[in-house]
Amino acid sequence: MTRSIAIDCIFFLLSFYDLSIRLTLHADILIRPWFRRKWNIKDSRRTPNFNQADICTRLWYLPFWHSSSCTLGSYKKKPMNNHPPIVPIPADVLFRYPRLAYEDALKEHGSVIGVYRKNRLEFIVDDSLAIEVLTNESCFSAEHGTAAMLNMSILLKLPNSFIGNLDKLVTKGINPFMDSLIKKLAPVFEKHMFNLVAGVTALTALPESLSEGAGLPVDFDAVVHRQWRSLCLCSSLEILTKVEDLQKAAIKVASDIATVTGIYQNIGYWSRTFPTIWRAFIWLRIMVFSIPWTFRHIAWCVWKDLRVFNQTGNTDHIDPDCLVFHMIKATQGKLRLHDRLWIIGLTTGIVFASIHQTSAVVIWVVYELALRRECLPVIRKELDRILETDISTNKRTLTYSSLRNAEYLDSFIREVMRLKGDTLAVIRMTTRDVKLGNYIIPKDSFITPLATLSHENTNYYGEDASKFISDRWVGTDKTASSISSAYWPFGLGRFACPGRILAIAEIKLIVLFLLARADIALEGNKYKIVDPLTITSVPPEGCLLLKPLQSNVL
Ligand code: HEM
Image (cartoon, rainbow, N blue to C red):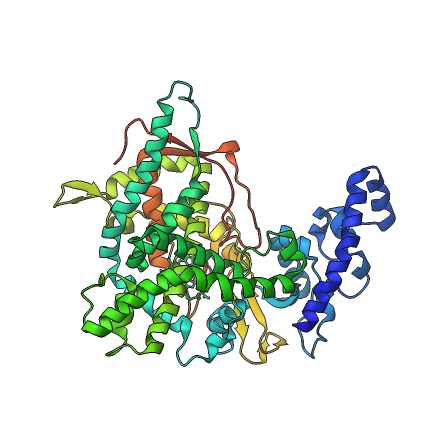
């Protein structure tokens, strides 16, 4: 840590060097060819894709170029015997072209390599070792990986497994109750999506608006962030739906945890350039101040419910679909102080796990659909077929069984999740020195398989593995949530995402209710990938256009 901070300080000083070069280059474009000739920077010695990096990046790494590595990080540790090769990949290249950089390095150096990223050595493996790494929990631990990412190794010292408990909670408290959950969620999703379309309908009625064309822009990201994220909470923590402030607090907590895990670290210049100082600072700010402060409302609500349970001995005041209810039921008898704190801790974990990734993936799915407009009529036809009639209200609506029958949409979502370009999406940490292939991976090392090598592997998917075929999975038993050695956007092994069934159901609800009333398109027919290294968690940016339908499906 001290060493890393010292390295960051050196980086800090060197950044002035970096700045001066950037200024010089930007000031006079004419000197660029001279620089190119002088430093012969046309071709990379290491990665063929490196020529895409700009001249500034190369000059930034110039002082370290002739050493065995071009990142300062590699001076940190002396490799032990049988250590996998450490491949120097400049940070900027990793950020911009992670997939190509890692794939090339693995192709050149073998199936396991070490790469320094954000001052941290990570081991990357190819498809041949992916299953071993993802499923052998005793050597490659998901729990250790998550705790280390959060800088919360204290979680591993607790008498109960935190992630194990989260996993059990979702498996026992959500998955068996999907029918009733979807019954509760569907009307809320319906209302929000229909309101969104109604807003556009009102605008298109104005004489100055475009009546033709692809539609009017809506701030879909904001809808997902403000409204839909909070809707997700209905499913897990019904308590939060009662008070708007609590929803906001939950969203803030989820985004704080995402920041601590480094999800947004790639986006900012300072966080990328001074990763260790940034991590220490952010950890302190968020874990010590922000989360306790923001979470106090939610914690207080849960605490009150738990107190009432302790006083009365019954759970009548809590919705039986709410996870707090299941947590109380799982604890025998009266709740002691540590039981209550544990339940509050698990609540934080669920808030993060259930909101963050789902809201990013829904944006991916909607944007991909907007680019493949030929799929919209097929989905609408499917929607018409799967709708069920509620006998009490005589109204056609979506139920969990109708969502399960949405085979085409399911296949589309699976293709999006497979091909959106995840790289280092699922992390593990070695619990001891582990032999992997011909190498020894030292204890406490981050290790992760490169997802693209599994998800687009021609051995599994045939020659058209990288081609998006929307109905590829229709009529097969492979649904968007069924994971395998060739498809693991939800992880694999003992701690594979337990919330995947709910996540896919929620994504289907939002897409179906949206398409029931509107056509979608993307402005300029494109979106921008904000962070190619963290595709699953950081959604793409684009401007969604909505055009209300002439005749609604629902
Ligand atoms: C599209 C949305 C989602 C994606 C892509 C996703 C992905 C993942 C991944 C990759 C993991 C790690 C698995 C491993 O290490 O093998 C995970 C873990 C987990 N997920 Fe999800 N997830 C999603 C939605 C949800 C939802 C809706 C819930 C809860 C209702 C949930 C609850 C959990 C829990 C409890 C864990 C284990 C704890 C942890 O590792 O943090 N997830 N998820």
